[in-house]
Amino acid sequence: MPTEKFSETLQAINTIIKHEIIPLEPLLLTHQWDSLFPALDQIRATIKAQGLWAPNLPESVGGLSLTVTQLGEISEVTGQSPLGHYCFGCQAPDAGNAELLHLYANDFIKKNYLLPLAKGDFRSCFAMTEPHTAGSNPTLLDTTAKLVGDHWVINGRKWFTTAADGANFTIVMAVTEPDAPKHARASMIIVPLDTPGYKNLRNISVMGQEGSGYYSHSEVEFIDCKVPANHLIGDRGQGFKMAQQRLGPGRIQHCMRWIGIANRCFKLMCQHVNQRQITQHATLADQAIVQAKVAESYAAMNASRCLVMETAKIIDEQGFAAAKHHISMIKFECANMLQLLMDNTLQTMGALGMTDDTIVSFFYREERAARIYDGPDEVHKISLAKSLLKQYK
Ligand SMILES: Cc1cc2nc3c(=O)[nH]c(=O)nc-3n(C[C@H](O)[C@H](O)[C@H](O)COP(=O)(O)OP(=O)(O)OC[C@H]3O[C@@H](n4cnc5c(N)ncnc54)[C@H](O)[C@@H]3O)c2cc1C
Image 1 (cartoon, rainbow, N blue to C red):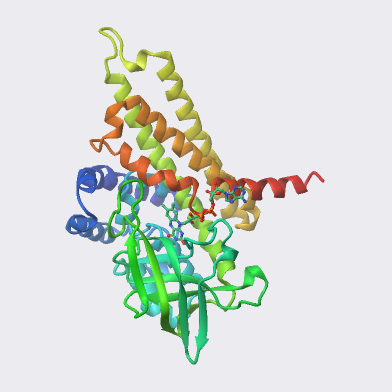
Image 2: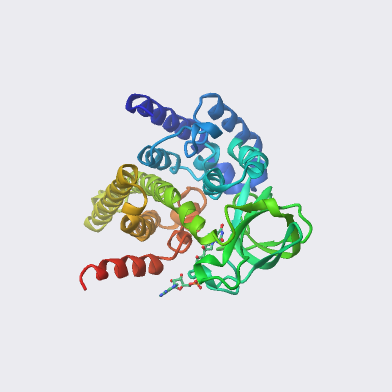
């Protein structure tokens, strides 16, 4: 998108976030997901009418065809509210799933799953992690899919399938080639969630909340669950390769979303310490120890932003492979920055920070997981360090 048009677009998105989406947050903090629908549907319709829908997708499927850098900037703005990405149709896991289907799916899947997903008529989920195998090393997963006649028969159990509650379909990662090398054993298959043999066992209680609908994580099982052979995405055994692809652009979106959250926290922290009287003559903002928190938070947030923008620029100019180190680096750097910002904000707010009277505790509960999902800190640090150390052998 040309620079001038992009600036206007960013401005328009910021206005909607500030004036229409943030005011809905008290409802999110006190109600179940379903009760938000009428208001969210109305905002989504407005966003579509203004041509701002699905910034992550190409124009051919109703998106905005942006560069990775532009998408990152939008993600930062929409990330300021937990409802932002959903309202603009670029929420995980649907965004990554749609990007994946756009690249790899056959025409049948594109027509029946990608198009309704891209329009926001469907929701989806991604079922890879299993309770009984280490998600950090997904080559260990043991859910199977066997081709029997012209159907895949799937058996296994998954958990932390985000947003499975109320979704229309899942992409399941299953072993289809048990005798192949470990990175070529698994494939991705679409399973409509009304298929017999699929069951949502529970919404897992996470930090005291089971959640519902889009804001939930399910444990699910597949018992002799049969889907037609054409529900395979890409080629047999390509699952891990496609999973990497799915995480690439998604990483920039996640990191910039976290920077949006960090920025929101930072503003709340500054507003709070400026007005909180701690003695008759001084506010929290007058205390050097609080000033240090403000300064370190601001520096961490801006350092992360520079790093992510640099990563996006490398991807735009040289492709994903050239940004491999950066893509690992920003994952753990930004997730830790986010944790620091959320914690500094909550701490300076005292008891108020623990309540649901502000958005801070919601962010804290929902986003601590940033250091775990899409690969825990340790996995990315190991991978980056190994690659760097090789250069000095
Ligand atoms: C909120 C949330 C949402 C999620 N959404 C999804 C989803 O939609 N779909 C899906 O499939 N999965 C999802 N996941 C699962 C997530 O991808 C896994 O939790 C993650 O890959 C880690 O796997 P694990 O939990 O099995 O941890 P394990 O692999 O058991 O690792 C446990 C811990 O050990 C440490 N560790 C791991 N490897 C190493 C190592 N090599 N050396 C040293 N230390 C190590 C890390 O600290 C790690 O946190 C989600 C998880 C969360 C928390």
